[in-house]
Image 1 (cartoon, rainbow over the protein chains, first blue to last red):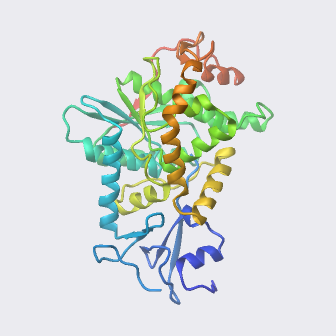
Image 2 (image 1 turned 60 degrees about the horizontal axis):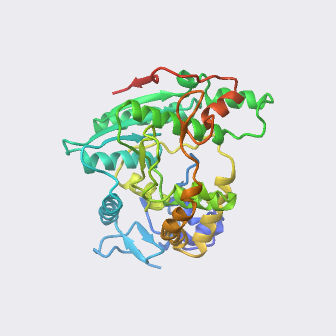
Image 3 (image 1 turned 90 degrees about the horizontal axis):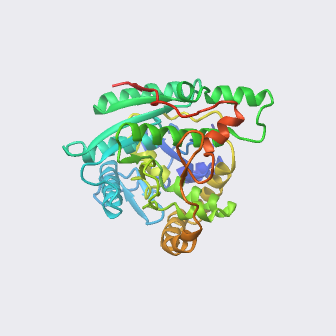
Length: 52
Length: 327
């Protein structure tokens, strides 16, 4: 998908996802939210809050 | 923006916003284990000769909690660790997570029992929800039934297995949510019973609860589960509803804007706890025994029997619990 941002935290903001509720991996490696994103990076967002 | 590094020089996987430090997988794992050990030590959660029943749902929190208890205490000859899973009877959710629990307890070589709603209470959560959809108990949500029944069965199972402690996977987020919910409901008595060292109940029928992950945020428990390859289930219960989830979202919204809020909220509560306990102590109802089932309660009839009555089930004075030994 087309995104405007260059960092993981920017991406989460753009998608309106609270960073407290997810872990993000880029190209199969978990990364801190301040990490940079490049073109063609494969980003996976894992929801970590559970409901019981 | 460049790659973020851990203090050791390796590539970081996580930055703890509220302290500003970044960690690689190995340093995060070490530090996580040290923090859990510190919680256990500081609050004296585990004592010599303990028989510890770990409530295991298969989710990240209980799985990490079991794996760590085994890692920390598995070599101690005087301490026994047993896993107990409660099967509420939620198709496509609990059946899947139970498979994951079986794999985990086999891997860890931990004795494992499953206690089912259906065989002990006569009804599963799916049964209760189907009846609700047909018009019964419209004003009660599934979490009310589930929470009360689950706590009851876990406590009874632990007692019948001779446990001295019940260990749960509650993390910092769970605790902060529970504190805030009790504030919002104005439930001072329940608040007074919370905290890292739960006030000892006066009934010998209650097995003391311990929460070794209480000082760890939910997100970090999830990260640890991934980094340590604990092996857990990531699915979410299809029936989740109620105030807890509104409170969860609220706390996470504040935390995202003001890092450290959950931590300071819980610490402030812990600091106020002695004063709160002293002020409500004399008002706490005497613990008696339920006149129907004989379990401890603060009125004439316990909450379990009260809810079962709504479902037309009579618990009466049961014989031993039906527990299935898995491994």
